[in-house]
Length: 411
View 1 (tube, helix red, strand yellow):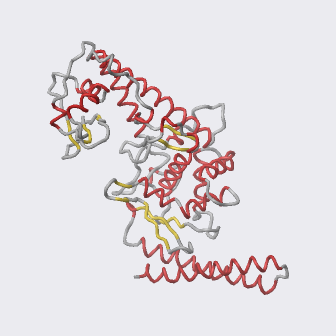
View 2 (view 1 turned 120 degrees about the horizontal axis):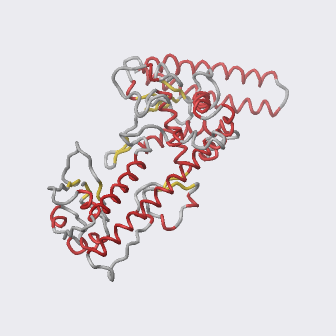
View 3 (view 1 turned 180 degrees about the vertical axis):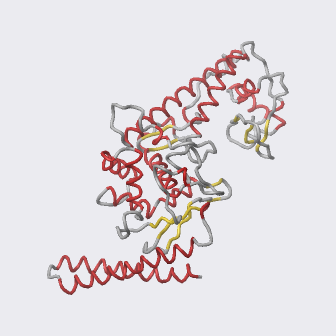
């Protein structure tokens, strides 16, 4: 059993074989007289929480006070062990549903595609099923913890001192709410709250992973994170060949390169071509970015917020960001942006990015500037001329930014 010695509230986790402890992440082992899962249930109970207020009032749960916890072995060990194993399973199911887990298999909104054949295959229906599953898991885990508390309160004869109830915010599996406004007061302060936006951001991250080949629709878990590349893992959806995904503020590039077109292809494969527009609308509504159409809203998300969310997902407490997708960014004008996948980086990546994409964007801007100037020179409509002048000014700023960035990339 492992736990953090410095914490506001003691919380112990079951640790499988193959892990070691360190100074602030202690471990407890059973010599065999007591079942380790029975001990874990006891140490996570309200009884021990109350005892530690006396044994360690400073909230430093090091080995000293922990070793002084009085242990009474209950006759019906099997019931407690069974409830504890259920709790461990619930927590593991929840943790393994997100990319951070070593045992992550598929994104939950992809897993739930064909659950109910009576409903259309959409992101929204998959989200609703996943939200319901999270709620059921939360309810069952809370009931188990309260039953364990009740058992240990009876064992220790503390019926007049303690109640078995556990606060919602102290249940350590995720609950999903449509918006922040839907979060009840009982959950305020919990680190396990997720919103619809969080789930959609997570889905887009998984989609980008498929675009790079980190994940595959045909393979569980990590398809590629270094080593030999195996093209046979990608039959349904092919990753980008050169490990570069450009992000533009308008539709400039061919269909097979544009990130929104790639996303649409992925959504058609995972869900259905018939529900593509419905899925794009649901994703755009969840993201809440600016834009006149769903595609514009999603494009603006990739342009402005994707990398920020990615860094937040892949960060380590105390040591900062650990992104696995890297962003090349020319600056505030959004002249040039492109993502690469760290584990596919090689000696040609930067050169390809500069020649095939950065130089191409410069040529596109030059061509568009000429087109806008032609509109200014030959169109009579004053509104069209004003719009062309405004766009030309934006394009000139982007071109200037790209040229300055080109020097940095060349270096």
